[in-house]
Image (cartoon, rainbow, N blue to C red; front, side, top):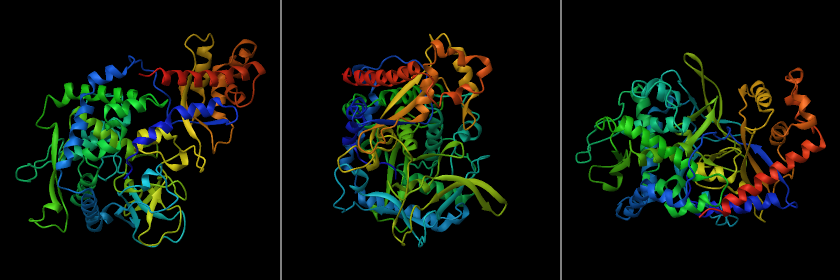
Length: 534
């Protein structure tokens, strides 16, 4: 699982971050974040306005408070879910995985004396993966899953399957929500939950959603059903993920980070409102607001209530969409040019050291080679030892918004770990007299063949663990943004193919000074924004 209870971490993602940057003894560095910031214009969200429209958050709080009556103890629940997942893997895993040398297990809290209150992933029970066979060396493949991108007949989910397969006859052509690929994956996940709907009174299957898509062989669908059942419940996510925290906690996070949760909530709520008004309300028989899932242990009996229960989850509703977006943000991977959900591989927990990110590549099958994803071990493992992966080079604010925790490697503390970060955004000014020339340069130049946008966001790192050097990519972009005056001759068409390369080196003393002042001004503005929050 990628979610961990870490409410106290949001303070790490804010004030101290910019303080490191503005202290010249700390130094700073940066890395470009995934994607550029949006150029969309939104009304400013005050805390009071968010409260007035925050009914879905209040619903989450109410559901969480009512959980005291839930007869399923968390440990018992996790053990049951692990049994369900492993039974499916044992019975049908070879149908799709090439290979899967791991088992889903309940990972106990760590007793390591070196762990402190900030090492949240180690402080409580959660699901994870453990090695089912000895791993002799690092870089050994633990699990591999093919994509089946054309029709979604496998387990892996990709955004295009929403628009091209599952919701092809439901969504308007060219649908592009504010939540982008994350929202499309969330809609796929809601559909998989709806397909598992049962009559709450009888426990009999009563599938909802687009129940016949994607079409899968029965063994593969059994794996998907087990995976969906084992996902964290809405109640658990209400405790563990910032998108479902209560209003007070979200307000603290909003005022203590340069990565604003209200912007994300706006995107989620706007998409949900449009989907509800345009699609869901028009066909509640297909798109119910809630679904009931029967969770039953494979070794349970009809008389064993602890191993057989009905679990209600919000589905095609604003709260259900936010729940699904939280799941997708915490469990998705960017592999082979697309954001993806990779069932069962995503049970692997994050490890700061001796761990690899999920990677893409070719997988041998009976029909040749297919594209897929690989989970590889970062070290040798004995049977029963936990398999950990890296969730990637993100800053603490991004880790918190994505996964609900901040790993030790992102902490700025006397005990070590990397520096904390802030997100800063720079763009070519609309009023720049050379704007068109600069946009031509950015359109010509590429990162991995993707045209650069005129607005770019960077994670700026400072404090303990930082190198003290700014990220060359950020400085290169800012040199172009600040190019002007006597240096503007470099924007002449004769230099168009070379000018981006020129920006990797200092252009002039004046340009370099403007770049440094641009970073300082951005830091001061970020501090002012946080201090100005209600």
